[in-house]
Image (cartoon, rainbow, N blue to C red):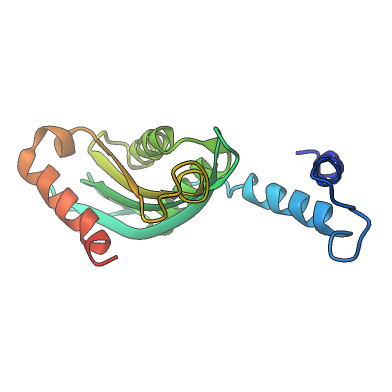
Length: 187
C-alpha cells in the first residue's frame, strides 16, 4: 500500500469537506488515517499451519468461538465488526487454536462483504485442516447500516457456511449451530 499517497488523498478529502488540513487537530490526521489503513490491510500471514497428531477422535466436533475482527465494507468503506465461530471435525490431527484467529484476520484484511468473508474463512479452514468437514458462522455489525442509511444500530447480519459432515449430518450441524450461536443469545 502507498501510505504517502493515502495520506495525500486524506488531505484532499479534508479540503473537499471544507476543512483546513493545516489547522491544529488535523495536522497529523492524514498520516494517522494512512497508518490505520496500512495496519488494517496488512493482516498476519496465515499460511503456516500448526497441527498436532491426535488419534481416536471418532468424529468429535471442535468449535472455536470468540474470534473477532474488523474489516471494511467494500460498498461504503465503513467498518464492520465480525464475530466468528468455526467448527470442524478433525481427522488424525487437530489444528492449533491460534490458527483460526490468523485465518480470520487474513480474510478481514481487505475490502469485504460478510458473505464472501464467511466463505473465504471456510475455504482457508478446510485447507488448513485438510478436510471439507467445516462450518463457519459469522455475526456482523455493519456501520454502513448502523450510522448511515436506515440507521438501525441494533441490526446484525448472520451468515453460515456448512460443508461436508457439518452440512449433510443434521445432528452435527445442529450441534455446531447451537454452540456457535450460544454466545450471541446473551449479547
